[in-house]
Length: 198
Ligand code: GTP
Ligand code: MG
Image (cartoon, rainbow, N blue to C red):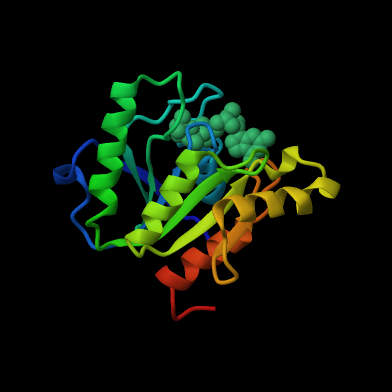
């Protein structure tokens, strides 16, 4: 995939504001601070186009990034951080649920999980929620650069066991810093958006 253009077309808080065209959409979900906005920046090859922060709770709306005029990457607020108020988390949760449960354009969900830690209960709930709605999910294990190579196999096993990842489930070891896994992600997008090219 060659990135020609990227444009943030709308920061939505409700369904009526979503784009009305029928382009394929790819959604990023995951705990606050897991690296969703950084993931988008790596894919679109921009440094800080999707705004990132070391403080959780940076993204507060559903942000639709039009890429190459061919598809959207959809960045959403993260879940599960105590420093973000309960009320705000509930609002974010409702926004994401409203999107997830009735969006024909949604082709693939990238569920981001921090590779350094055991998945949280919220991660597990989200994973099960996505499967319940029969959405196509790829788990993106983020910040892999922060774990030494010798520990990676063990950490991967812990995550697989905690989430109960099955043989047929898709996952990718990823790092926004080193671009590990980036080609695997773009090939998933390519197959859906440009099915007739190789
Ligand atoms: P919210 O918008 O709060 O939900 O967070 P987010 O999931 O969008 O996270 P964001 O992309 O803002 O990244 C959070 C922090 O993690 C930032 O300080 C990033 O620089 C850092 N970060 C993200 N991805 C990676 C990675 O692959 N490796 C390393 N080392 N740091 C990362
Ligand atoms: Mg963000």
